[in-house]
Amino acid sequence: MHITFLAPCKDLSGGIKVIATYGNKLVERGHTVTIVYPQSTQPLKRRIKRGMIKFVKQQQDHLDRFKGQLLAVKEFNNRTIPDGDVLIATAWETAEWAKGLSNSKGRKVYFIQGHEVWNGQQERVYDTLQLPFKKITISTWLQELLTDISGDEDISMISNASDFKINPQDDSQVKRKYDIGMTFSSISNKGSNLGLQAIRQIAKTYPGLKFVLFGTEAPSEDLPLNTTVFVKPSQKKIGAIYESTRIWLSTSYEEGFCLPCLEAMSSGSVVISTDNKGVRDIVDHKKNGMITKTGSSNALVEKIALLLEHPEEMKRLQSAGFKKSETFSWDDSTTRMEAIFSEICKQEQAA
Image 1 (cartoon, one colour):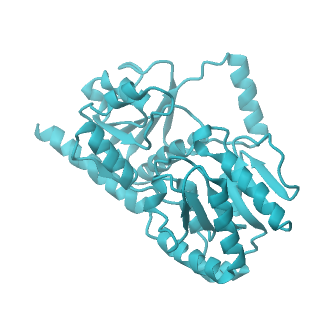
Image 2 (cartoon, helix red, strand yellow; image 1 turned 90 degrees about the vertical axis):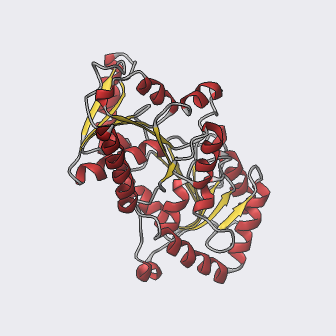
């Protein structure tokens, strides 16, 4: 099949990582895959300068690792988008772009990775959910929500998976030099301020703890002295960070899926997460991790202290979390997505 993904941007976000991962998996299976994204509006000199900086620092965003055709365009129209069998919108803006494209661009699919109303565009977002596209989403709560909003009873759910995995037999040899880790973002919905508050609070009670953060930016707030911050680390480094951390915090108010929680669990970290909805498919409270109410740093501190004081409980949750993580597979998810694409192409031919 000739498959085209319409990406809203080119960056290090989790949603773009998922798009690139599926693109690579489909390329490996012999499909022709193109990912199209908006060309930067920055002046040419600045783009060249940024490219040189990325090269020198060996920085890559997720689309840089895509093995198929990567296409930057100024406008999304019938001249710039290649013909194909399947055309996949991956965000509400891209669904608007796809709406007016010719059927020659492919059978239209809407791959929905979140409840994208945080930027005040709810009416436009909800309008895209009424489009007659085949809809695929990534978690149970999103599937139920999108069904209610759109009235579409045929929304498929395909879970994400993890790129990172330890060998549990070797875990005793893994040196977990960090006690608590989390991703950092200045986006308010991510709730990183809650995680930072929790870190500062727990550090007062347990002054010997070591903390680690990573993200596309560094926090400006004061942090405990024994805190390590990585800005735009490589995927290899991210895997090493997970493997080096005992407890992983997730602080968001809402997530489509919460990929970092799964990545941490598959790396042997114990997850403490706010109830961001997306995490419900991953963490079963007190069975393979901990879930707290959103918006409370005190709740996070309480769960951290419980694990620190009960190492046997930490070990039990670590083992159960890893077993849960093994139920998620990129290969299995790609097979499901591939089957959906094949089916809608057959329906198009039959029509």
